[in-house]
Image (cartoon, rainbow, N blue to C red; front, side, top):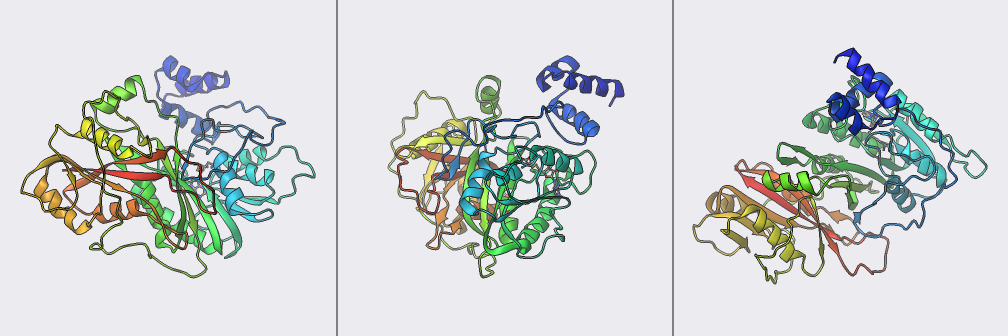
Length: 471
Ligand SMILES: C[S@@+](CC[C@H](N)C(=O)[O-])C[C@H]1O[C@@H](n2cnc3c(N)ncnc32)[C@H](O)[C@@H]1O
């Protein structure tokens, strides 16, 4: 890029202009601004002038532990030295909940994608020992400075930082860590360094997954048996289709022997739902990504590998028969994001209404595994027991070209508290059917009457809607 323009962008940043203002002034997009800053400063931050904060509020106001599987924080949280300057850093509410629920005081917590140190700040506040690792030495410097607050007798945790690679944690002994709490890059959607080949944010999704597998292996090695590893990961969108990076990353951890203790949906509030985006979501028929997956893996005392994966011919878990009464002329706005929030009592009607309005010209089928005539539909909705062995024939015989197949799945908590991740398994089983391509992963968040006694486990309060397109 023209060095003069680069300088102008840096100067504008130094003068406190926002990304939007810089974009308008110099005719550049956010990707370019990020690139210029990362090249110049060495880290991908949104504000160059980071004022040293000496805040008095060291705890969030009215904090309550989350008790169900959909987490939504309207503001990201700015107590202690937390701020949103480091691009893509996570809300401190996430590590706070995880640390409180899955570790105890004086435990050793590891974040091997430490970034600006959000997890470390929470460890310091909550009296956990912390090990922060990041591939970028400048991110480590930023984290150190963020953890340098109110040093007093109140805080006595041991804090250690390493510039290092999450794929190779040789400086840590096996079975030495009580909790891993980390937030990887989502392949290459936000780049954290300009040209570091070991920075996973410089990798295309398929290579990224192979490398994440090494991270999963190392996580399994360093974690004590019976302990937990929490990872936040999101999906990507290429053109108008989702790339289910989240599910694929989860699979890599399962392959290495981890079980799923919690599969949480973290809602994102930074996507627009009105005007331009709403219109485009309808016009080009795609949903705006509005969720990420926060998975709490458990390293069981005994190594069990792949215990989740069902044989293709086994029937899936069922949902109750629907009792549907849809008003197809309902004059309601369509959902335009990947999280659909409905009341527990009428969610099915709303889901079906949205599917029909978005994908069908009226020629749809709600399939309940009865025998079918040789007729084709533009939309097939599966709400009930899924016998996956029938899906291939259904697609071949009953779905129009360009037609949509949509399947509702739910996570099942097994007797031992471990989650059976149905949607991940359906996606895995259907991935190799050449005639279809995954288009959307929608989260149906169920609201209403959430007054339950919280026990050790989170209450499962969401379902998944997998949307496939016939190609
Ligand atoms: C999503 S950010 C983490 C942000 C952090 N949770 C926070 O709140 O500041 C991902 C981090 O992973 C780091 N990273 C990328 N590849 C890495 C690798 N191979 N090993 C360790 N860190 C890596 C990047 O430098 C970046 O800081």
